Length: 160
View 1 (tube, rainbow, N blue to C red):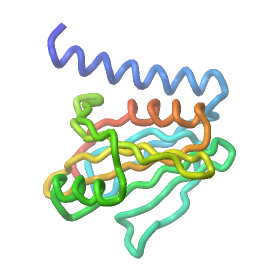
View 2 (view 1 turned 180 degrees about the horizontal axis):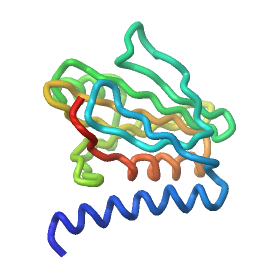
View 3 (view 1 turned 30 degrees about the vertical axis):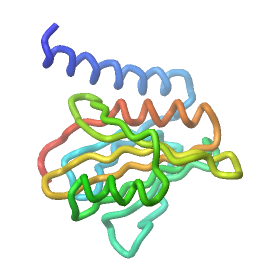
View 4 (view 1 turned 90 degrees about the vertical axis):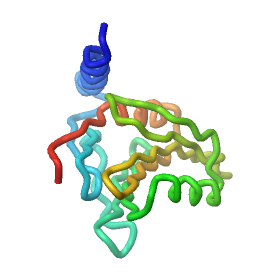
């Protein structure tokens, strides 16, 4: 199997997982969400609702689901990926490692668990001269598993 076939296989598996969740009723339906001003998109469960900008700019917004105990924040930084990673280290990020999902290279990281049990996992990827961050906060193992399914749905779409 060559690299292109393997990449296509990962995409098919990611979509199959989302479809299985839909069929099982864990996720009632799904919504494709484009990362801020980028060529990337992920599929979120329909149970997640748009929570508006998380800053004074449309370059940062969130989706939440109190039912699933899951929040996802999307950020766009007009700085290099290296600068974002250095900032991440300053915010306490750890378990930083490179990953590739559906042919999209990115950096995965975690934050130490909060006192209330909530945990965070995030991903940073480059998009031209900007860096994108996807940050998940979750309160259950089921929600943690869903973050992986969401990230397995990432795909490059047409250029913005």
